[in-house]
Image (cartoon, rainbow, N blue to C red; front, side, top):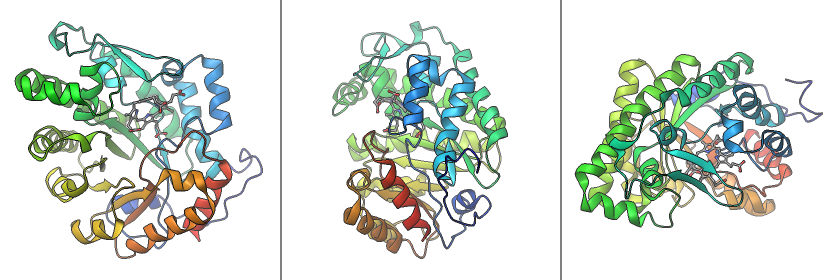
Length: 352
Ligand code: CP3
């Protein structure tokens, strides 16, 4: 690792699997750190490799290339966690929708389920095989102190893409659909739950040490709908994964959940919760169950800005969680225009 670190040195004494130990409830004096979307377009080595592959899906389905992308931010920065390079939309692809990532636009899933029955799609579970091969390769190549994270999208968030066929501003089509035809919508959620349990269990069996459930659009639901489409399906996934893989460690990230966070933390069975940047870390520390590990929640735009905004943001997060197991992360994914030097400054300050 040292030799391929391109001359950059992160000066710390690594605590073995510090990230995993925090997720299991042990506080570390220095919060372990990784960043959502740490493998991505802000890295020149990512952009170079992506170009040779011709697109995101080609990259994500090539196990050698996807393993390389997963390792890039570990080599460069020595993060405490490596996150599998893949996407939450691999599950809809395996459920039979076509998936494309066009240049300059977001992902597209066809046909959209708003006017097409889920039952009419042919499932293609073998589309997920390259992901498990990527996991095997990364697990064999990571430094021993680094914790390897797998992930999947949570059913509500994944369903918003499946129903609308693309990203949507306020998930309006999907929220309406869920009210108008809760039986049909529930069948979509159930299909995602079932495949996601298998998908995460197979990631764990192939070598990831913890998994994160991304619920990026959890914030758009009313309280009753949040119970039904966020808490219940996430609880089903956590129970299913832990039944198949006893001791499995799960991080839940219900972005935008706000005041519904404590219920999410208590009722889903997740081991740790991720906080987005809109959550006051002191409030979270007060209302979350004692001893429950938290992850977050620096504003990605403070990292983009750097300087004083960055330093103050880091200190505020660290100060709030001095009595609780804490994983340092952003409140959402790192932006593609973030300077590398700001990421280096962040890591140096967190590690003191
Ligand atoms: O965090 C990581 O480094 C691991 C890889 C990862 C990606 N996507 C790679 C990716 C993870 C964990 C995701 C999760 C994901 N994907 C979410 C949940 C988290 C979030 O950001 O809210 C969502 C909603 C998606 C769906 C998705 N994938 C969108 C909307 C887009 C296009 C917009 C964008 O940011 O580019 C993607 C593409 C995608 N997934 C890229 C990466 C690195 C960019 C692809 C590229 O152009 O190279």
